[in-house]
Image (cartoon, rainbow, N blue to C red; front, top):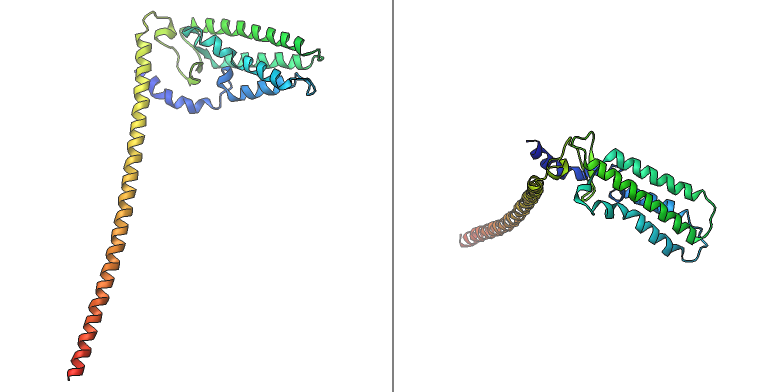
Length: 234
C-alpha cells in the first residue's frame, strides 16, 4: 500500500520541487548562483573572458550529473545534504572571489581543485546515503529532479538485490502518468465536441428563426393582399 501511495504522489512532486534549494543542477537557482559567482572571478578586460567563463560554468554545473549517473546506486540524496553541499561550493567560490587576480591559468587551476573536491564530496555523500535504509525528511532523485517524501526505498534503494520491485515501480509510475494523460485528453476532446455541438445548434436555431420570421412575413403579406382584393370586389 505504501508503494502505491508513493507512485500516486510522485507526479505531484514535480510541482513541489520548484521551491527546493537542492541537488546542484536540478535547482535553477543554483545555476544562476554559479554563473554570478564565477563571473566575478574574471575581470572584464581579460581576453577571451566569455569563452573562459562558459567553459568553467558548464563543467561546474554538470559535475553532479556525471557523478550521480555513473552508478544507479548513487541516484538519490537527502535534500538537507544537497543544501549543505551547495553552500560549501558557494563559499569556495566566494573565497576565490576575494583573492587577487593572478591570471586565467592560475584561476583555472584553482577551479579545477574546487571541482575535484566537489566531486569527492559528492561521491562520498551519495555513497553514504545509498547505504541508508531508513531516512528522515525529503530526498531528491538526481536523475529526474523529483522530490520524494518517504522513509524508505525498497528494491535498489534499500540495498536489496532483487531489482524487480524497483522496475515494477517505474512501470507503475509510467502507467499512472499515461492514464492521467489519457483522461485529460479525453476530457479536452469531450469539451471540444460539446462546444462544437452547442455552436452548431445555436447556428441552426438562428437560421430556423430567420426562416420562420420570413415565412411569417410572407403569410402576413398574403393575408393583407387577400383583404385588399376582397375590398376591391365589394
